[in-house]
Length: 118
Ligand SMILES: [Zn+2]
Image (cartoon, rainbow, N blue to C red; front, side):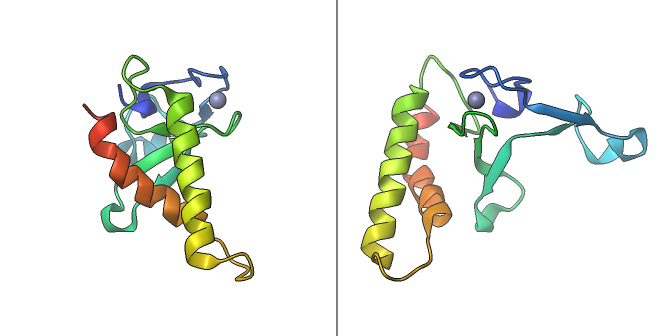
């Protein structure tokens, strides 16, 4: 199921629906007409669709198409975080100051995608 159809986090129960969208803006959105509190991670090359989302409450990442029967979300999150931290260290080094973490998360998502969307 598309993660945008969830009104609450399936893991922590945190609210994902934000404030109602004013009627005059409904044509720009799909129902239900509420702003989403989910944090989107976008792949620059496909700007219209988010690669994955983050719960604003428990900070877990969720794939755009999430089926709890097929994806162990805790395993998926630890792989995503481990990869991001590991590759960031290799590419950037501990003294470079910046972080490529978000970029690395998107990169791994591309690798994992075929296994998530079975
Ligand atoms: Zn949550």
